[in-house]
Length: 325
Image 1 (cartoon, one colour):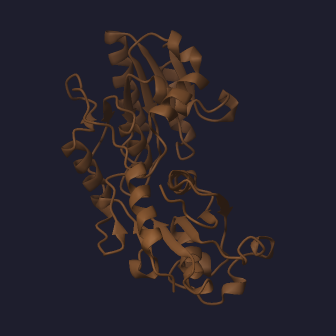
Image 2 (image 1 turned 90 degrees about the horizontal axis):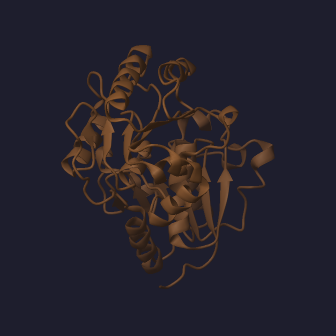
């Protein structure tokens, strides 16, 4: 395999989901990289990536030395704020930097060398790659490391059910009513089939939902983890040991990572979903990767959804055959 030359910059904001995608792609490219967490000032933060003038003033003074020459050979950005910097790099480097943007930048993808946007974004273009889900590092090695990091989960009764909680977003109300319904179903199934429940909250999960799960699941084997006060994040261990995963419907990243594990994945939906999320759910169901929580015993899943290595291989080939400038 030919190696890429020069340094790669990975540019994100502080959002964990954006960082996971961009870093996963960079690691699969197998080239040295540097991670820059950049925060544009207003008005650029409001208008990114559309407004790209006034480059010297985009960043606060404390961050300007990070975004300075020598420019990288490759830049990977994820998220709207990062899209401003990957767009700028194409001009600042005089076309010498190959620019990659993950997620729909909401403007013409021709501003970048390659855009990686999931199919449900419905973004077309000769330079657009369209995975089914989001990019991640979940594979057999990652899962084995997760099991090794949490050996105590081996002692939990099976089936071990991992429950991944997201948070409300526009068009999806993960409120107390939703939490009540989900917790009741989980508890009923555990009482019927036994096993354990490993519930993980995210940064977006409202405290009221976490409290409700703690109350409902008292005495049930497993855990409820919601942050540092509960100890080290056991997320890789939960995915590694899970016999089944239940994921709230709001997060493309969580659903994609769950579907990469290789165990049955279910979700609990109340009401309708926003169109883009609905398209994503439909694609997962068509691929045999996702079922409803209230469905009968889930069938054996299809092959795990592991797209990052394929995307990275295609991207590496595009970079190697490009003509700078």
